[in-house]
Length: 172
Image (cartoon, rainbow, N blue to C red; front, side, top):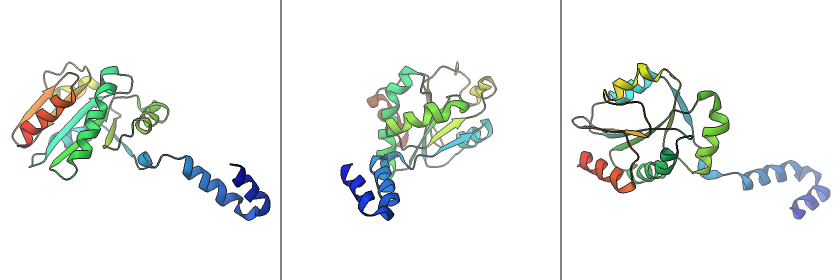
C-alpha cells in the first residue's frame, strides 16, 4: 500500500490507475460473473416443462434455511462436474426479492456459487408448488430431478452421495 501512495506523489496521473488496480486486487474474480435472474411462476413452469434428453436438477432453497446452506455446495459441485454432460442445474432461491442485494448476492460470493441462480419473485407459493410436485408441502430444501421420462421429487436435505446417485440414476 505504501508503494501505491508513493506512486501517487511522484506520478499524480497514476492515482486513478492505482486505485483501479487496488480495487481489482481486492475483488473476488471467481464470482464476479454471477448473475441472478428474477423469475416468476410462469418462468419456472417453462423450465419444469422441458422434455428432452437433458437431465435437469432444480433445487429450491434459501439463505435463511440451514439445511439448504449445508447442501448448496453439493449442487455447485454437481454444476461444475456436469458442464460437459447433458445435465443442467438451477438453484431457485426463495429468499425475499427485496433482500437479494443484502443477503443473496453476498452469500453467493462467500460460497463461490457459479451455478445458475433464479430468484423467485412470485411469493404466493401455494399458487405454484403443486405444479412442481403435487405432494410438496412447501418445505425446503426440495429438489426436482427430471428428464424426458423420469421425475424424482425430494423434499429433504441431500448428502453429496445421495444427490449424485439420483442424478446418475436418471442420467444413465
